[in-house]
Image (tube, rainbow, N blue to C red; front, side):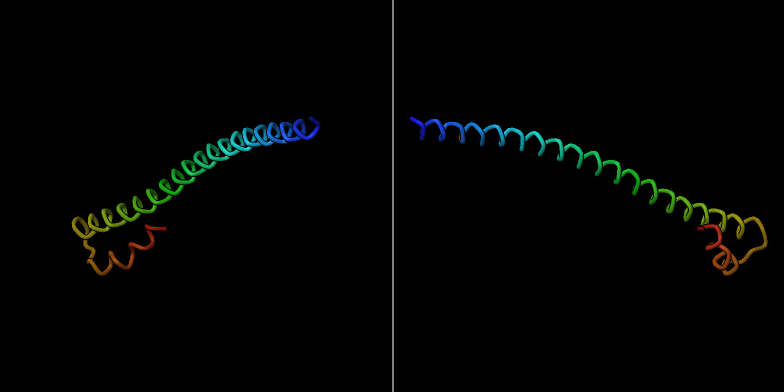
Length: 84
């Protein structure tokens, strides 16, 4: 009877540990998903700003070539200044 009692207690202990492990595993999974979404949004914002600066530099350079007396060579020399 004593042996049966020990086996039952060990089984119950493993079941409880399994449920605790699964609960912590789901918490970690949710945290990882949130972290991934926030990191992805941050990286997307940085890339948007970089590409927007490139677009602004080329738009303004084209405007200077078209409306003022700049050459395309001068625009390409000056355009890196607008990017940073």
